[in-house]
Image (tube, rainbow, N blue to C red):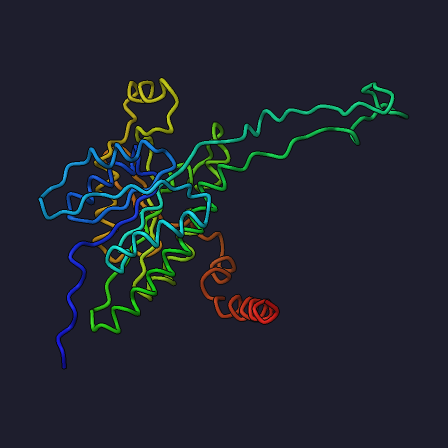
Amino acid sequence: MSPAAPPPPHPVAIITGAASGIGLALSAHLLSQNYKVFMADINPAGFLAAASLPLPSPSTPPPTFVPTDIASFAAQLALFQRAHAYSGNVDVFAANAGIDDSEDVFGAEVSVAPCNGGGTSAEGNGDAADRLVVQPPNLKTLDVDLSAVVSGLKLFVAFARHSAHADAAQGRARRKRSMVITASMVGLYPFETNPLYCAAKHGLIGLTRSVGPRFAREGIAINALLPAFVPTGLAPPGLVDAIAAKGHLTPMSTVLRAYDALLAGESAGETVECSLGELYWRRPVAYPNESQRWLNEDAAGVWGGAYGKVRAEKGGRG
């Protein structure tokens, strides 16, 4: 029997939102661990950011910056293809890019369309509601902070499975591949200032907890970080100083420590809250009664059987 093929010399990481903040810090951190890092961001400043990162040794490959709008599935696919081409593998995917609220849900502007005679009052009883003009919401926040992560999950799993098949064919031992989603502490709590951002982060926590245990059976780890307030490019002017003055800044070192714990361990579907200098491994809320527990834990066959038939029928028609 021929000996097993050696693994690629450098593990490969894709990091979105890598031009600044957590993404840039993580890029430097994984470079220091001899990763080949593909840095993605919509901001072209990422070219300079990537060029500025020090390499720990002459043998460490320099990072590659890939301009990417993660809201575009085609752009994310191109990013994964480029990273995969380096060594036939993607070991780590940090789905980190995010934006704050694109829509002020509390400030909806309402106007009344003029009636045919040029006035603004409705005919009859004076009710002009049938002519209210309300613009559709700007859902870019949900596109970037939630939908794009689902797209990234689909791509990461597809490439991870492809690489796992290649490993088996070449006699390499199965290796863990990890996706770490940057959610937020506000995925656990209300956040009136940015409710769409809050909704997206709640969604990411639900996604992580729902898919993590299932994918873990394939050696694919899906986990999420829930940082408290870490200084990043999302913060408007003055906010960092105001929060720092109250003593509530979480250092980047806490976030990087959480990454190390998730990448080194066997976690699956975990959500790790990072606050000040501490890590909190957060569990889902407790069930209020036995019925709720049964529906979520013991009824997998019931749910799966029903939805399996529906999906099979849809697939057959497709």
